[in-house]
Image (cartoon, rainbow, N blue to C red; front, top):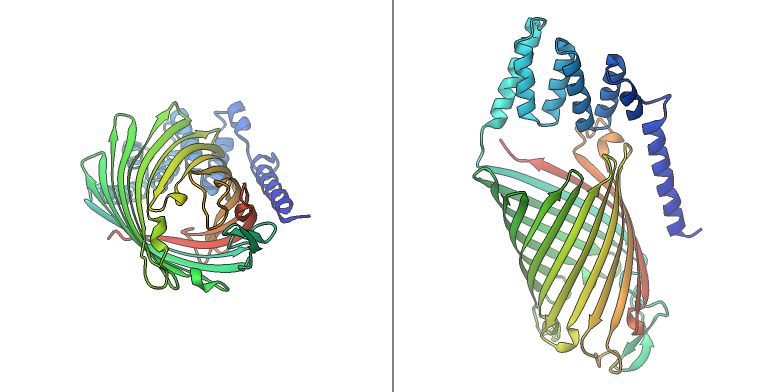
Length: 434
């Protein structure tokens, strides 16, 4: 059984176990049962507790709000609803419930003291802060079976002759990164973002690809009507240990707007300027200096609270210093996202068509390169706190497991290859507000 079949079977098992956990009538209460008995207090409370345990605050709040309307004098329901609203960071709704509790004759002195403390906390949160700060730390490990995209035949064209493709295939890569963000509010609907990040990537065998990265990103985000719009800029430097440094500047605009309750459309345009630092050790680094344009259009659809999909298509063109490197790309992508009780799972399939404009005598002067690449990937994200609650009680540390496989087919043998990799990552975000 090959690895791809094993992963697909593993994914089916994950989905089956999750569906069994959610819908097994002898263990959990289903939404169908709630629809059949909407006024059953005990049944609905158990359902709300069940949804709260898996982090589905939206469904918990919806159930408790309905019970609050059916049983307006029940102080326990109001207190439970208030606690969930505070966890879900819904201050406006929470303050409304606090007023209801204050005016409820059944509220005890202890209840009133509790809501007073919560009210003060919400008021402190509500005070407008012009600046907010956050930081993130990430560590990753990946194992690749074809890190250099060696052709399927282990042969390559070089100056119109057929030569062996002898570069290493299997390699392991360690990566680490950290970033810090500052956000400045501008009015009610706009903000300015400044983000700086540093990354480091090291391979075990082919250390010539070891690189340190530095990136500075800025963006202005605002809302116009029902559209969210972002104007962004990015500057990055890749400092290769044994190769020429490269620099990239990107500027663009992106936006999104909802369509109904479940659909969201998105779009973007970006302009890039990439340069290589030609030096005595790499005299051809600047031949791929390029100006690039790219356009993307996407559609996200929420089937329900567990399943969502994403469709995307894009076009890009790169105009290089040396014409043989000019090319255009057509991209198509699809993702299926599953917000399962046991983990978040995302499955994707992407197609990329690359068309070059001129032949390249450094490999095959008689053909103009044309290739298509298909990439399948699976990403599973799980909080560390689900495994080791004593290490991560608030579930702020995320573990990620990934697999991807790329199959490239081209009219030039160099770019006919298959590559797959497995990855593991740990990430942690920090809120730096005082």
